[in-house]
Image: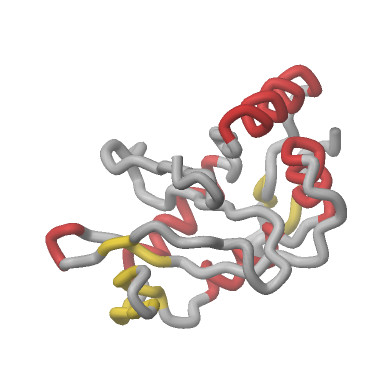
Length: 162
């Protein structure tokens, strides 16, 4: 597996972008993915980098976004942290880890957004299919200062509905 990649953040210090995983953990995550169609990777972003991003997200500007009948959320407007996360996710070492864990094959690129859901504000997400536009894998990264508790990620079989 790849080593931790480092890059200067422009302030004279380096931050680990994506942490590599020991081979046994990658195999365990692969088994999880094969049986549950999802895998939980903890500590994806270096603690210092995560703290910088969380601070930027807390100061970010958000606007309500409606996705047809699927979801209502607040999407962060163009911001350096959002762009940096997309850049980090497009690192070839990240692609290698994801492909190894999921068996999805070659990944062309990653595109994403920073958003938040709040039940108090009427935000929601409903059953939907992400198998559009040549997508291979979906990824969600918690960008809050504390571990998130609550909510449930459920994945169902498209054919049977189970």
